[in-house]
Length: 400
Ligand code: SF4
Image 1 (tube, protein in one colour):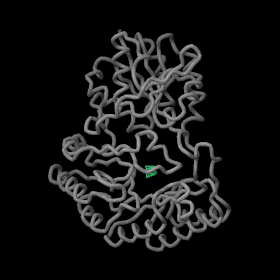
Image 2: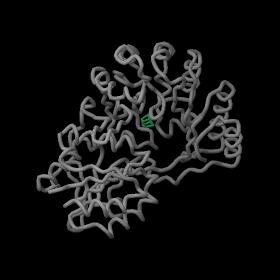
Image 3: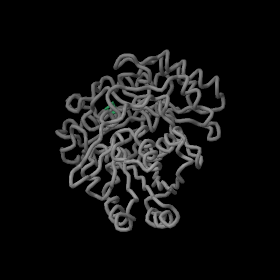
Image 4: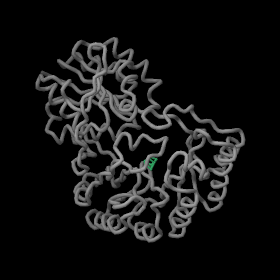
C-alpha cells in the first residue's frame, strides 16, 4: 500500500514537525511512506495531488491556540474533499489540551501530549494494516463518543530527534522537556509534564555535527539554566559549563545559542558566576529572562514561584557580567489592577535606562491551563501609550 504523509509545516511548528519526522526515521519508517511537506496555503492543492498517487494519505497538522481561528475553514475545506480511508491528524499544544473541539472541527485523530512514541507506532500500524485505534496517546471519535487511549511512556530525551534527513530538516536541539513550575497561563507543564527530563551531555555532543552546515545550534529548553538542575531554583552550574565547554571543544566553529529564543531563563536561576562562565562559550550576547510582571501580587497569583526582586537581581547580575537582557513581560493577567500594571511599567522604565529590551505579551487564556476560562487580557490606555512610546524608542517588540 502506498501511503503518503502530507505535513503542513509553518514557521511556528517547524520544531514539532522535524521532531515527529525524526521519530519516524529513528524507527526506520521514513522510507516506507513518502513524506511531503506543504503549508496551510498549499494544503488543499497538495492533498489533491497526493490523493492522485497514493492509496492512503495522512494529513498532519500541528496547532497552537493562535492557529485555531483560521484552521476552521481549512479543515472544513479539506474534510469535504477527503477520500474514505484518508485521515486528518493533529497534535501540538492546542489539540492536546482541547481534543473535543479539534475533533469536532473535522480532525480524525488527535495525538495527545508528546507524540515521539505514539506517532511512529500509529504510522507503523497503518502501514501494516493494523487497527490504529489501539495505539497509545490518541483521541478520536467512535460511535458518537470521544475515545482516549492511554498515554505512552514519556520518551527519554536522548532518543528525541531534532533532525530529519528525508528532505534535510533541522530544528532547535531540545535539551529539556517538562517544567516543575505551574504558572497559571502556561501550557508547557501540561504538555510535557512537571518532571523535567534532560538530554545528557553525551547526547548533546553527538547531535552537534548535524548543525555544522548551518553554523549554529539553538538549544531549546523551558528554562535553559535549569538544565540538569538537581533541585528547583538551583542551577547546576558545573554541568552547564562543562557541557558548553565540551561543545566548544568538539565543534569549535559552531555557534551555540543558549538561554535565548526559543528558550529563556527563569530569573531565580541566574547566578553571576554562571553568566560569567558561559559568556565566552555562547554566541548570543543577550539572555532572555521571563519576568512576566513587576507586581509581586500578580506573580504570586499566577504561581510564578519568584518575585520581582528576583528579576531585578537577575538583570543586574547578567549586566554586571557584560551580557544584554531581553525581558518577557505579560500584561492583562486576570485580576491585574491599574496599580499592578503601573508596577510592571516602572520595572520596564528602570530597566530601559540600562539598555534592557522587552518582549511584550498580552494574556491569552490557553486550554488546559488553570487560567483557561479567564477572559482574554487587555492593556489599559496608560499602558498602551507607554508601550507605544517604548516601541518608538526601539525597546519593545510584541503586540498589545
Ligand atoms: S512559564 Fe516557564 S516556568 Fe512557568 S510553567 Fe511555563 S515553562 Fe515553566
